[in-house]
Length: 297
Length: 148
Length: 125
Image 1 (cartoon, rainbow over the protein chains, first blue to last red):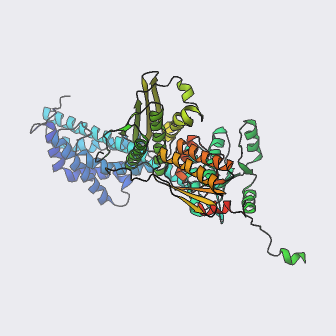
Image 2: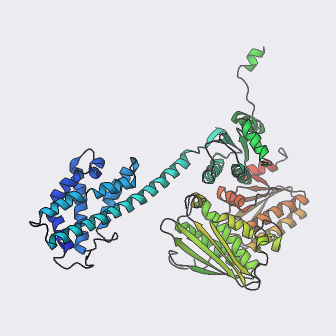
Image 3: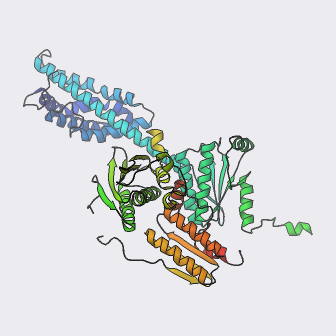
């Protein structure tokens, strides 16, 4: 393992760089058939070949500078863009980063084969050193892709989490001056924060005097959830709106009592309909059947 | 005022009402530059206001150092309030919610703590007090403790 | 930005019939808030004021100090037989106040000045 930091002309990395340049077309053709590229560029093989060429060029740059073990080498920037996007595509289809790493590792075989062909006698020191340099740079490539894939994966998860938060909390206008949020699923701190913000924004936008938090779809109410509800109610009140918590199922009502949670002055109703009736009543709105007068006659 | 708040700490004096207002403005500007959302900005600025007033009223004045942070994944803001006042004798008591201490500002420390992600008080009777508060740019304040 | 604070020593107070409309805006120094508290108390005591509307829609932050001043204005006004309504608190400010632990239970609130005036009109009272 003796790879010089700064490659002198004619050193092993330099030779590998030359090899990448000369055999660009052949390497790209072989790599295009490897699972990594084939699975991403399912439609056009030409595109796969082009992508492979970009990677070959990048590796040629990296080896020319001799920094074959440095994942921060400038040449790898292209690789990050090219393979990182591909790795993210693979990750989206359910591929693990270990699988992706294996697929990148599989690129080494064809390249080494082609490099060996360059040496009439594969047992010379030159041949050994060149193969070693190629192997090293391919290992580094694998690290670069792993790193990129992991970062992209984390970003993706974060983006999806955000989208889920936004999608999961619609605020509905039920009547002039009355808005409602039907809460479905578990209420953790992050979600209740989003619920609170979107409900309060809706109160301003709709000039709503009444806001209904419907918890029919919330599986359990523990003291933390109760605390979130009360904070939302308190914030709405500070803005000048009254909050009604509806959809308290019998089991949840029992839990609330057993846990000794004090919902204090919060107005509660059994169903969303009851809550709406309450809000309408408070605004002096009466709902009656249109034919009520006719049938009474 | 530095041309850009990036990566450089800003140190401001806290000696008067006007200084409190100036601290609030600087903290808001810094938080906005770092990408804090409106609710988070409001929380950070309110925390700064509480802590700066503590420094002024209880510590007899001091300084605040505002430092932008970047841990590679998230950006954040650190505020360090220092005074050379009498210090806090009973920190547990000072951290308890209440209306009555030092002119009705009982929510200062405990309230400010709830508005940021990291909070530390270093105090010694007679030696002054340093309060450090850190807030991170996250759309949801609690996600850092959950995901880490 | 070299002169950070434009001199605005007084908070505008507008008399609309027997209702005082106070508009708070932007940065409020502690001293100004205390001055307002005193001015209001004197004006309520001196004339037949029945209601006070404090419009805070232009206020970007309310900390525990300003919160206490607002609560005290309301209770003082109450002792002088005037009702106080806090109008137009922004969502971000409301969330922060609740998180801070300041829910101002004694204060009557309204979405905006119009609603606050409705609340204070004899019909609603």
